[in-house]
Structures are given as C-alpha cells and as structure tokens.
Image (cartoon, rainbow, N blue to C red; front, side, top):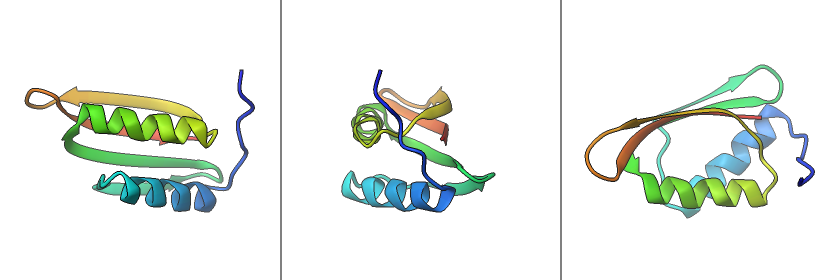
Length: 84
C-alpha cells in the first residue's frame, strides 16, 4: 500500500480547502475532530466531481476514516466525510 502522511488537523484543513477550491467544490461545514481528523460536509453535489476530488486527496496520501453518502437527485449526493 501507499504510505499515508501524518498531518495535523490544521494542515489537513488547509489541504482540503485548497483542493476543494481547485475542484470548485463547496463544503457546507468543516470541523476539526481531535488532533488529526477533519470532518467535511458537502451537500447536493455531483458524485462524479466528489470522486475526482477524493482521487486527488488519495494522491496527496490522505486517509478516509469514514464516509457516508446520501442520494439526492440523479447523480447528486450529500456526503459526510471524516479524513485522517
């Protein structure tokens, strides 16, 4: 497997904010969870665009701790994501 990078929550938040801006995604909410985890809420967003963004995070060696998707209309989802 790929070695994951150990980041502080603040460093992770900066990376997530930067990569979301590049992908034109908007987080409804972002929350630090302890020292190293970050919770991200995204609403009514293209599943395909979220997939591209998650691939970018994977290249940056960010681990997904948990993720939940809820379907909206066709191709659109709400997501609650916890990154580590």
